[in-house]
Image: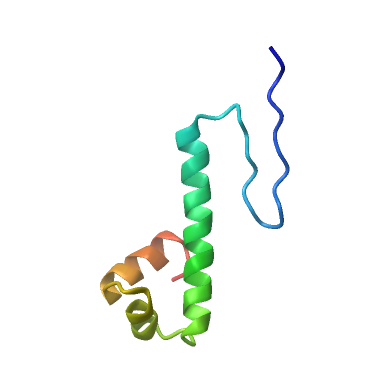
Length: 73
């Protein structure tokens, strides 16, 4: 059986390591995508959290939690 190869990331994407469980790789990618989405969402709405929450279709309090979890606030 061949040894797994760690694939290089593109830009700032996380590295795919097939020796890790799918759950771990999936969570890493989801955190990455969520953070990028939140950064772009805030930029689109001029850093206005209330407007960003409306644009995302979520409650402002929930957006604050997501921002905190992503280390953006």
